[in-house]
Length: 450
Image 1 (cartoon, helix red, strand yellow):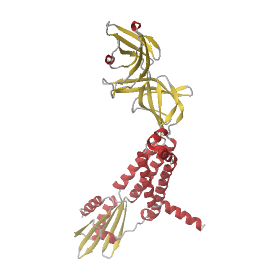
Image 2 (cartoon, one colour):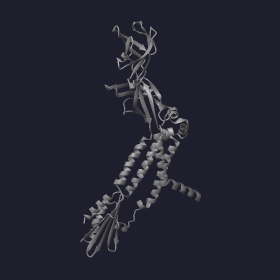
Image 3 (cartoon, helix red, strand yellow):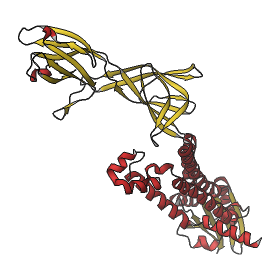
Image 4 (cartoon, one colour):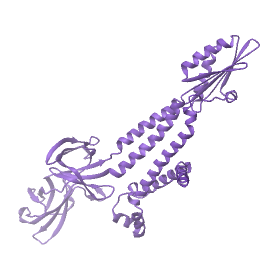
């Protein structure tokens, strides 16, 4: 039994150590730096190309590519929670008598040596002065007592003792709640993305952290997607009309924009991005430089069509929403392959925005893109963090705790009244670790009463 108690005491003292707190905090700071330096949740090929095979194996062995979800990082957070809890209990045991005693002890010599004090001489009798200060102190302080001395009286008073102690433990508790929230979010939460075209429905998302698929308990359907542009072509607003499908029924419908997500069963669906799907058909304008005639040809991708005036054939090979020419992005383009009857073959880049672009090419026709089918997909960020309520609670508690520590501090006052040669000599002294200015104000106010 003694060996068991000795072991428990050693374990308690180990977790109550301030040194352990410092070691854990330094470890968390160092690992956070590592997590910032090493890109997280990348593809295996990315690490191989940038760091080499040996370093990549080390990254995967210690889970440094998903560090904040690794077992050893979670263990550090758990150790910090235990350390703070045990330190708080240890301090409470030591301060129990000091803060919860019904009859606290006061040391007169401590106040006599205090820097915060004021002395007054009065012609009034000591008994009258005693009654005045008793009434004044009882109104401002939660606890006071009077002691009779050989040559007079001493009034001791204090306030804010329990609020200061409570503030400290509220702050400690708030840190534990914050860490708990972070752990819950790390273990049970997720962050993923989903691209949906208009009319599509999906219930699986790709996780950002682990680069793997996750099935939701419901499906999301993109009913409609709309994007508006400024005159310079940059996006002004993009909006997605979403439906939540559960058990083959629509249970929720919402139109989302940036910073106005859909929320369902603790899961948040944010409007994150958008993109253009490959266009399947386009109307091309062929301008004959010799005759001055225009010809319109509607074409689908990867199908053969006759050139105007039977000069050969052309194929629309591809569509891309972003194309660089001369180092500059010229936007959406169609890539057209042309085969002339003369046997000549060449390719043409036909931008949507620049109608005269093809004039640079020396050919029988100047080609430009007309109308084409535009189809966008919406990029959704889908997150779940069940630790958020704990995070909010922790932050509120830490604000309350700090307010109690700094604005409701422990204050002590001593009023020593003694009689000598028909005169009353009054010493008013005070002490407060967190509010010296406040205690001086109280001393001056009490001194002005007489």
